[in-house]
Structure formats: structure tokens, C-alpha cells
Length: 393
Ligand code: GLA
Image (cartoon, rainbow, N blue to C red; front, side):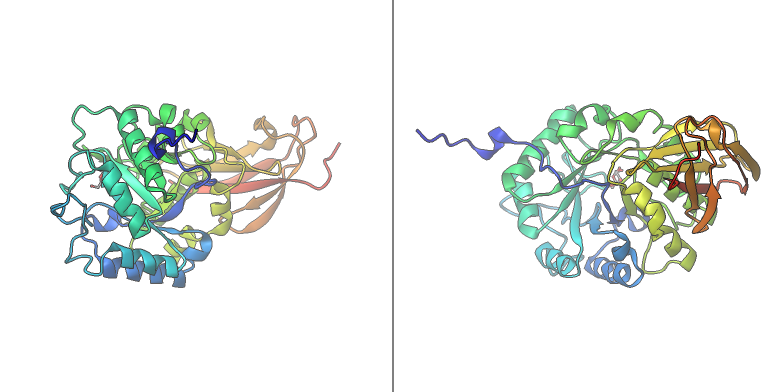
């Protein structure tokens, strides 16, 4: 007897699509719903020229506003014919030819947050459309969901994507409402942990907040993340007008310490060299993309002197000193005060791009050298510690 089970009965998420946190660019933070195919093509070309593609940014994601206001007569979701006259299959082909992957946004509710058609009741049909357009990544949102249950709703979309047969990363965007870190691992590849980010340091608005505020709420979530299942503290505001350069650098560094998805959210066609250098600092990106896949954690919180630590592969560590105060501070810390470090390490400063000596730590970690530095307000120092060739006795 041959047993024919419909694919959906065996539904699961596509495994192995996000062994390290996804990297790319998303239209929302800068462009809102004002997106069209020219913007997307120009962005792709710019990311090739400015080194972002080479640095690892591979998903180009259309956020809210790509849809026509109405589904077609057969209930198919359609792109806005004015914004995307060539259609999304053609756009997907363009992105693939340029070496990118194609991402899209829609919503588990009846309408997206910006009022375009949502996916509720159309999940399997929409998943087939996305697969036919060559979509590789979907950010699935949570507006207008009525009384629907989060976990069940996102499972439906997971099953729909699986049934459509094309491996597509599922980015769960339910804002941390029902603790998706507790159920998201079997459902998607990443899940938002908070409401929306906006381009300020620590402001709090009704529906959005600055990155410093988001950072605070990531403490304790580190145990839930790992390869193929990441906490998502929202997309990057690096380079956007509400942040100083130091705040952009600190935001980027801390998102890397958090093993966060790195979705640039600025206009990458027009950015300063300083912003480009932040977004393409390969040594800092390597902290985020480290294959051990461990999210970093806050080791110490002292006004002006936060210390974040992230365990890396090959017994290396990343340590980030973050000055959250309004004044510059003088750091003075003996490496022996960081008990997770044992034995001597070479120290590399990843923003200065310089080797800066060693920790001088003994094998048991009780005695070591002292690290001293000036740390400007809202800025960071990020170091990679690599075990020294020979431990000192
Ligand atoms: C929600 C999401 C945002 C963005 C908007 C689009 O607010 O959290 O990231 O996708 O919807 O309307």
C-alpha cells in the first residue's frame, strides 16, 4: 500500500536557511510605503558598488506597500501596477541575477499595517504566489489579526510556505506580544522581540522607540537564539538622521553582539563614507555572523560602562564596552574582572582595526593586565579576544 500524505500534514519549517543571522536591506525605515521597482533596482546596484553585497548583505526586502489595494478576481495578491509595472517575478529575477535574494513583507491579519491586503485566509494561495515569484524571505506582520492566536497563525503560514515547496525564510513579526522566543523555533527563522524601532537613541513614542530602549529589553533573551532561530530586535537605523555617528556605530556593534539579523534601513544609494564604513566593517560583522551562533549577553551594567560579551568559535570572545551616559567616561578595567576569560588573549580593537596587546591573563584567569581607554558618550569599543599562542603560566 502506498501512503500519500498531503505535504501539509508533514509540515515543518524549511531547515538550514539561516545558519547565521540573515543580512540584507529593507525598505521600511527610510521609505515607508513609497517604494517602486526603480528604488529596488538602484538599491541593489548601489549595494554592489559600495561593498555591502560583498560584506554579506544578501536579502533585499520590499516592506509594506508593494501590493495593489485589491486582490484580483481569483483572490490572488497582486503588486501595485504603478509601482511595480514589470511584476515581481521579473524583479525577483533581476535581484537573483545580481547575486541577491528576494524578500517581501505581508501580514497575518486581514490588512497590513499600512492598509494593503493581508494574508488571512489566503495563506496557501499567497505562499504559492510568493514561490512563483522567486521569493526567498518573507517578513510576516501582525496588524489587524483580530482574535487570532499568534503561534497558530504563524504556523499556518509556515505550513503554507512548506506546501508551496520553495525554501523561504520566515521572519515572524509579531512584536514580542506572545513571547515568540518561546514558540518560534519550530515555526520561523527569526522573530521580532519588540515593537518598532525608530531613528533616535532612546526616545519612546506610541508605536516606536529608539535602539537603546530596545537593547534593554533584549537582556535575558540570549538563551532562546541559535542557528536557524534568531531573536530580532528590529532593523537597523544606522545612518538615519536621528542618530549621531557614534550612536550608529554603537547600535550596529550591539546588534552584532546580539547576533541580530542585520537589515540595513537607510538609503544606501546616498550615504556618507563614515556610514558605509560602519555597515561594511567586516570584523564587526564577523562577530554577528560567527558560526557558533551564540547571542551575546550583558555582563555588567554600570552607568556609562556597560559590558557586553559574546562567545565565539575557536575559543574567542567579543567584548563590547558601551557608554550609555551623556558624558565621556574613562574606562579602567582589569581583564581578570571578566571571569569568563581564562588564559592569555591577543586583543584586537575592531573599530580602530588595530592589535592592541594582550590581556596578560594567567591560566586560571585571576591576574591580568588593565585595559584603559576614553569612551565618548553613546559610543562603543569592541574588541575581539583570540587565545594567545602560548598561555603564560
Ligand atoms: C509593522 C512592522 C514594521 C513595518 C510596518 C509596515 O509596524 O513592525 O517593521 O513592517 O508594520 O507597515
